[in-house]
Length: 127
Image (cartoon, rainbow, N blue to C red; front, side, top):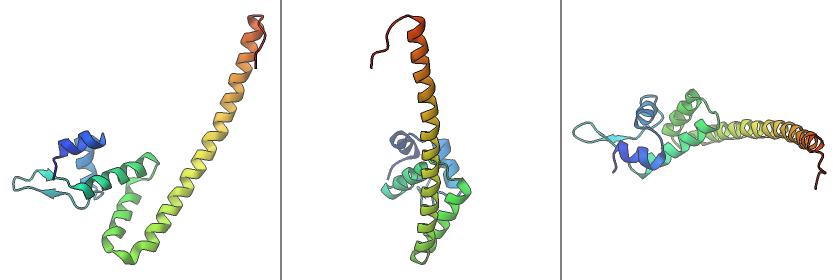
């Protein structure tokens, strides 16, 4: 069992964010010692990494909370949890496609600038 400070160091998530995640019901199994200090185990750290991945990919806290609730209900909710993950995966894939389309536009503009700079410097473009 490790402290919240150690978890913050391991995960790069601040202690205040970890406390917030717990208060929002996203870390359902964090234990406490006799003095009330949080104690984390390997499973808790795995939850932190999972939540971090979901947040980094844009999943709202309310949806993560729903996922955790379903998880706590047990194996009868596997299909529903899978559906949630598939829907979120599709949203991520759409965002990635949009990012690539936008990057293509930026790359095109950069190529134009390379040509313009070469013309201004009266140098030839080398490919």
